[in-house]
Image (cartoon, rainbow, N blue to C red):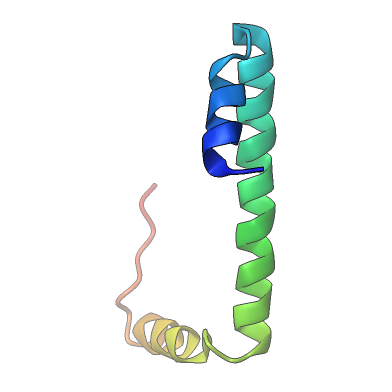
Length: 66
């Protein structure tokens, strides 16, 4: 199935089914994001960011708004 075919099918959905699809797709994207984040973490691609965040915290560059 092509993107054009998917877009055409989505465009033909009634409003209630479009809302259901939109909710499903948002959850699907979140799962894809979570999986990618886990892979990046396991591969060490986030280590530099974590190190910088810890350094900023230790230097008092983080604050709480409340």
